[in-house]
Length: 508
Ligand code: NOJ
Image (tube, rainbow, N blue to C red):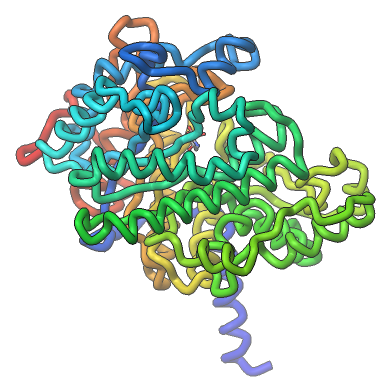
C-alpha cells in the first residue's frame, strides 16, 4: 500500500469515528444568514380549556377522562399550561427569545365542534386570530400545524384514520382553516408525525385511540393520512397558493437507525423504511408509493399467514401520482437514535401479525447514551440529515422539532449540551450541502407529554403547574438558545448570566 493510501485510510477512519461519537466541538461556527430559528408547541399539550367556549371532545379528552391512569399520575390536558388564557405570555416568551417564528397547532374541535364545517365556532376562531395577530404585531412568523393528534372523538367513532372518508373530512377542515387564517399564515404543516398517530394509536395501545391492531389498522391509517395530506396540499396549491402566497408540507418523525454491525446493514435499512420511509417514500422519492421492501415483506408474511392479499393496502397508480411531490419542504422531527439487528429469534418475538413482525428487526438504545427518555446521540442526527439529502435529491429540510427532556430544573446544562451538539450536527450537514431552512426547538415550554403526563419536561421555559396561572420561567437553555438565534452562531463556551431576567431586546 502506498503511503498516500495509508494516510487516506487514516483520515477516513478519523472522519467516520468523529461522526459516530459525541464530540463537543470547540470552535465558534456560523449558521447561514437566511436560516430561521423558532420554537414549537401543540394545542392539546398547552391550551387547556378543554370544554370551554364551544370546544367539543377530542380523542385525548376521551382517553384522559375515561381511562385516566393510563397516563402517568392520571394527568389530563384539561388545564395544561393554560395557554387558551395565557397566549399573550406565550408570545412574550417568543419575543424574549428573539425568535423568527412560533410553530403551534390548531385544535380541530375548537374550530369545528361537530367535526364538520356545518358549524364554525366563533370563539375558537377568535382565539387563534388573537394569537396570530399578537405574533404578527411583533413580526413573528406563525407556522401552523393543522393536525397534531387531537382527532374529534366523533370522527374516531366513525373509524378515524382507518376510514377512507377521513380524506375528505380532513380536507374540509383544511379548507376552513385556509379560508379563516390563510391571509396571515404563510407556513402550513398538514399533519404532525403520522408514524406516532398510526403506530402508537392504531397499531399499539400507547396513544389515543388505543386501537391495538397492528399489521392492519396502522397500515390503513398510514395510507389515509398520506391521501388526506396530499388532498389538502393540492387544495392549497390549486385554490389558495396564488392568492395567499404560502408554503405547505408534512412533518415526518424519523429516528436514526444504526446497524449494530456491518452484518445488520440491511436490517437497519428495512427498519428505516418501515419507520419513516413509509411516509417519505410516497412523497419525496421519484418512484412514489410505499417502499418496495415494505411491499415485499408484508405481502410475503401475509401470504404465509394465510391472508388472501397483502395486509399493506395498495395505492392505485393514480394515487401514487397524486401523493408524489406534495410537500414544499421535508418537515422533520428528530430526537434520538437506536441500534438495530436482525436475529432469527425475532420470528415469534413480536406479536403476529404486526408491523414489528413484518419488519423483523430488534432495536435498542445503547446503555452508554446520556438521557432520560430522549438519548443524546448527535451523530445520529448528522447521519439522518445526510441520508435524507442523498435519498430524496436534497430537499429543503425544515426541522420542525428537536429537543430533550430533562429533570425539573432551571439550570438544565444537559439540555444545553444536547442543543449544542445537535446543532453541531446540523452545521456538519449544511457544510456538506444539506439545505436546512429552519430549526425548531421543542418545546417553548413544558407541556402535557401525552401518556407521560407532566413529569417529562421538554421546555425552554419551566411551567409551574402548582400556580393557577401556570407561571413560566426561562431555563438556562432559553438563554443559550436566544444567543444562538440572535447571533446565528454556535459557541459552546458562551455562559449566560441566568440571574439577570431574560428580557425583550429592542425590535422584538
Ligand atoms: C413529538 C411530538 O410531535 C410532540 O407532541 C411531543 O411532545 C414530542 N415529540 C416529545 O415527545
